[in-house]
Image (tube, rainbow, N blue to C red; front, top):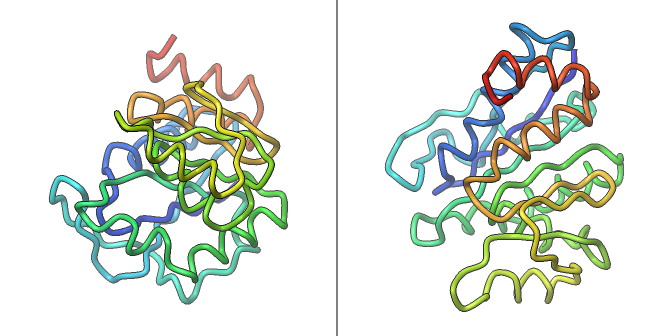
Length: 194
């Protein structure tokens, strides 16, 4: 069984995290390749962007990257405290470890920002949410990323996307990296995506 570590920063968007738990859960239930998701955070309790309160399953300090095959990162709102945890040095180092191990890193919306800040997107293609003033994409470019105006961008082991509507695509892309196209087709069909 494959294992995905789902990092939940303060102020994350619950929908953007739930696509990973749902898609991987459906793969466990009806797919040919089971994938487990374990949530972690820097805090014992997190308040999401829209005030849902969540308790992660695993304490961040006890996480060993060797126990996981991929890392998933939802986006969130700065006003809800997202960057307090997303830019924390401990999490940025974990991103670097997953990248050094060439394990998939899947980021939805501004979940790409800590990936960029960690340095692993330097001279690699990526995308993120495009605020009306373009500030997040400019910041991502300042981190060294080659920013593309596409809904989902895959560069090697890293998946980034533009916003909440792209979240299922990111989760299915990650599932494909972990289990293959046939399993994704089966799960998409059972979930009525097509």
